[in-house]
Every structure is written in structure tokens, then in C-alpha cells.
Amino acid sequence: MLSDSEVQRVLVMLAHPDDVDFGSAGTVARWTDAGISVAYCIVTDGDAGGHDESVPRTEIAPMRRKEQTAAAACVGVHDLRFLGYPDGSNYMRMPPSHPDHRAVGSAALDAVYPDARNPFAFPELRTEEGLEAWTVREVWMQGGPALNQYVDITETFSRKVAALRAHESQTGHMDKLEEFLRGWLSRAAAQGGLPEGRLAEAFQVIDTA
Image (cartoon, rainbow, N blue to C red; front, side):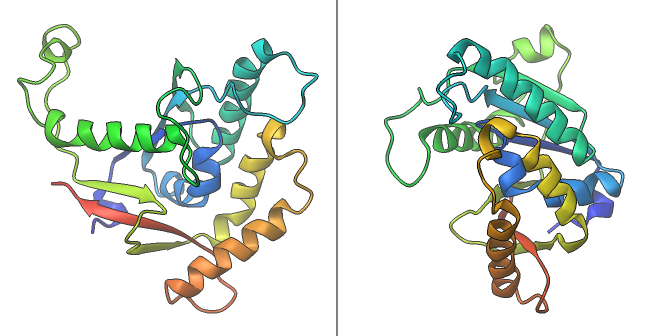
């Protein structure tokens, strides 16, 4: 598993605005504090989300882009790429996993292997955009099926909360958001063997080098 000192860049693939902030904003804040360049690629605008029926649907996508941009700034991320695909339109829903999470995760893994390292796959990326083949060394999955990495985010927890509060259309109704997060992250820390009182985000890290 790579140490932070060995990492220069991280690309975070997201299905919706706020996904990264629930799952890994505390870890992202640690990375940016360490000088690692982090970029977000948000596949949908989360236009099927929200709780206020008085807000026109046409206003949701730009609102959520604005919220995600503000949330990213809380943890030191300023490079955001919004792809603008429709929310919830990839797979039929099958609880408990949102269909977009499965679709984006699958697409990201498919891109990492075998395509990204193969100069003959999608050759237009090389000829038209000047992008050379690239071997991704590790993939971190938020809450994967075989957790093996627990990141202590106790010191960056307040920034995670601030990032989530920036998603007002999604968390504005959650009066006990911080209490919920502390319970969830405390359990992850205990599972990872961290001392009592610590908070952690959990990942499955896959060696893809």
C-alpha cells in the first residue's frame, strides 16, 4: 500500500455530488494537507435528489454543482469535472446500493484495467488529446466488500462536516448530522483497531500496478 509521500495525484470518481463528502472527505483533506493534488470527476449532477418539492427540477443540477464546488473547497479541492449524465438512469434500482454508485464504480475499474495502461485502447486520446497510457497503481473503494484501510480523520472531521453542510439541499434537514457521522466513523475506527475516541473512514484498497 502506497504511503502519502509516494502519491502526487488522486482522481476521485463520484456518481453524485456529496458522495465523496459522506465517504471520504476527511481522507481527502489529509491528502491535500500533505500536498497531494486531488481532482473530482462527478458523473451525474444529482438532479433526482433533494427534499424540497417547491424547488423546480431545472434548478437542482446547477444548485448541486455549486454546492459540490463549495464542499470541495472545504477540503482543499479546486479541480472539479462535471460530466452531467442523468441521475439514476444507469441501472434498475436494487437496494441498498444506488444504481449510479454501481455503474460509476464498475466504469472506473474498467478504465483502470485494462484500458488506461493500453496505448491501443481509445487511441484518439493519444492522437487528439496528447494523453499517454497510464498505469494506476492503487484504487481505493469507499466501503468496499473487503475493507483493509482505515484512515484516522479525527483532525479533519470538522472539515468533513463543513463539506457536508455545504450540500444544503441534501443535508439541510439533518439536524443530527454530526451525531450520525460520529457514530458511524467511531465504529469504523474501532473496526480498524484505532484507539477509543478516534474517527476513521474505511476503504478497500486494491493494488492495480
